[in-house]
Amino acid sequence: MNQFVDSIDSCCPETETGENRQQFASDNYAGICPEALQALFAANAGQAHSYGDDEWTRRAADRLREVFETDCDVYFVFNGTAANSLALAALCQSYHSVVCHTLAHAETDECGAPEFFSNGAKLLTVAGEQGKLTPAAIVEAVTRREDIHYPKPKVVTLTQASEVGTVYSPDELQAISATARQYGLRVHMDGARFANAVASLRLSPADLSWRAGVDVLCFGGTKMGLPVGEAVIFFDRRLAEDFAYRCKQAGQLASKMRFLAAPWVGVLENGHWLRHAEHANAMARRLATELARRTDWPLLFPVQSNAVFVQFPPLVEQELRARGWSFYTFIGAGGARLMCGWDMRPATIDHFLRDVDQLSGSSSR
Image 1 (cartoon, one colour):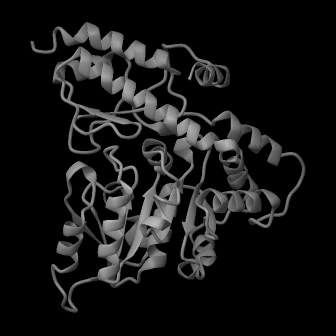
Image 2 (cartoon, rainbow, N blue to C red):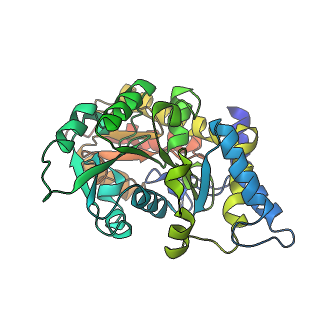
Image 3 (cartoon, rainbow, N blue to C red):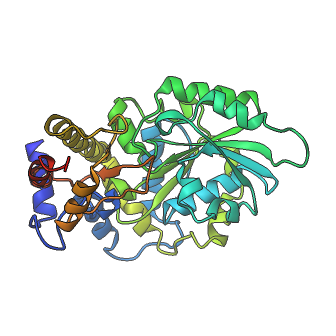
């Protein structure tokens, strides 16, 4: 761990104060990891074919096939909104519906993009403890109505890791997939933090995706250290028919595709992606453990990936913000979300905990 922290310090030097202080608001705050940056510079050496017909894009796609142990169809797009929305649009028609959790990013934070790109497919939201879907909830949504006046359920989408940082086990994924198959539904996985889920469970990416019944995975790149870009992975190639045209029409076909693909090569080779996710998860566990030891403030969800949800007393929350700390309170079921990125330093957590120590004694006033 010390060697990894040293590499972070050399890659992204900064002080604990000022505008460049590390924050807990989002793992999107983190910079580019050194492996991705090195690959990006290498891809910039000379010319290459455009629109994905280049060696970097082929290498990245082939490396993903190796990671997932299957001959999947791979597409690179600029961001998660496009990845999820275009993937869902490929799985359903305008008169269909998509079953998702009430906290799903597709429902709460995509500005209607899934509905827009599918020409109107409706999101059917269901509740579930710890931010996760259950087979029973899916059945309730699918059987709610069966008449022609109601949008026909066609897809189940789930988030791994969930919006509140919890992780689906293979058994949970298989149960959801079996239920989906029973009702003729496809399974889409929003994997913005898929790397953190793999690191948390210490299982193969295949066991947490296609072997568990997932048809399409949107594998998040930016949160694990890429500058930009997500991978849309179709494990059933038949579902990817004409997907390249969807990407082009949506403005997601990069003319210089090698700059989206090359960072993937950098992080996928030698397991760097998993090492970064393991570090982020470890920092979240450390933060949660110390908060529980030092305060009586409740942790709202199990810490299973790189997110910590805690209920700060109102005065403490106000004072932490006054001291320059940033975190979100609108995500999940209340409380503050403290997110650890791939580059989170132990020193940042120590600094935050010093402020917590100073404030915890007066939190009841």
